[in-house]
Image (cartoon, rainbow, N blue to C red):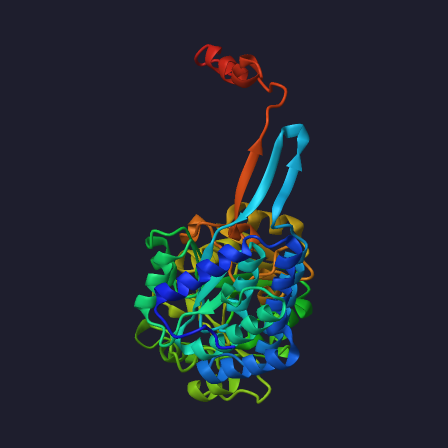
Length: 472
């Protein structure tokens, strides 16, 4: 089963998707769920999860095979769990006392724009959500990841055929995928869901088609005075190094309070970090950001590659690098997202200063996305949630594993994180089934719910009738 029925234009691919979706729109909930299971199994099955992980690394040169296997399986499993717990066909809510019944209906054909960092996991993740809503999906992958995505789509189509679902519910744009073909897809489909470059996100919003995009990552994480330093260091290490920091949810900077700074660095070093000599920080920044842009040869590479490139005398068991910086600044590139095993660290005088540093980092890049904190003080976590312009605040978690959904928190599993209007996004939550449904509201009359004018305007009248200058 080839990834598409035949090589063709973008318009022809969308037309096939439309015909498949119109057929699938009549499916029962049980048939829809079986199709979702089939697509999930197409990637979760161990041999295919491994094959596609190997192909992804070979194609893109990003990340590592072992972690991509975990990502292919864990994200798929978690997303399937979430989806199978939801109703997406017919009546999804019925409230007789409010006279309101809500019906779910498909959005139609979804255009899924996906990045090179996850050329199998992200397309299948989006396809599962789309098909759960009885939609079809056409994937426009990064050119670097096309062969991996096409192979993943081949497997998904074969599994759909086994359960009697239309195979054209999932397709990939034919190679070579061009910017023009991707933009044409955005214009032809019913909904665009874009994960990846901010250029594609902005283009999707300009396409004239309803669109959902994600914001840029650049996660700052605070280590508070009350933190369990060993636990924080272990979680940061496993999170930062996962898939060589390809995730937008990977920690990019740490803000450590002064009274635990030295002990925190010791704990981080014991967990595999190598603290770079401050005299080498400028050289590292120049090599990682030549001309102000990320070095494509150094992102998402093993620590050994970075150690050699930076000329560091680091232990062989080094997992990632720590570079101490004085303060975030637009003229200091290590303030931003690094997509590599390099973590910027700032010293904060106190918690107020830590919040200020985090705000400066987010103002430079990553506003809307997320922050993390390691602490035993609940008041500190609430302060971050109340004050910072982010969608997610993760507490005492390995950020990469928690931000996109976890078996140990309540966020839905996803590979696409909405970042609100702070990042120019239309959603401020994790991408989920909710974005792939149209809703019809059946509305009946109920006993009149008409409050008095006094109830609604009374506080205003009281204020206005108060004599000027008189205080309550």
